[in-house]
Image (cartoon, rainbow, N blue to C red; front, side, top):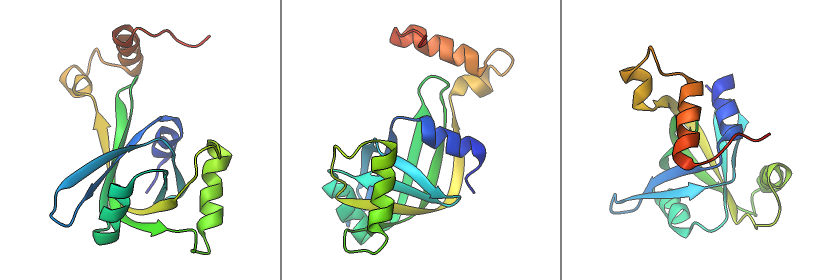
Length: 154
């Protein structure tokens, strides 16, 4: 399910947004900085300080996660079922270690949110389909850099 493009996007995006619902079906969306993939169908998110997301997943495991490269304005929306991998789980140490290896161990991982992905959709800025003849990743990057007042790393 996770193509090379999806894995690359997971590896390079700095935030994902986890959407859950509470017992009253009220939505909650929470940004997450530490996320990675375990295999071709499983996304892992570190729970650092997200009590609402954790409570919601415990009650209703269906979730959606999105991530977009702010420069190319391309990304993905994933849907699936989440489960909480707690410190008591035999797989917790190996899964939590992936975050320390990729990011840092500065922030304690309270639990790991493991999502078995069942559906993937692309996210594209409207320019890609409104102006397909003139919109490229490079033109999107240049426009975003101008908008955000940043320059490429040298």
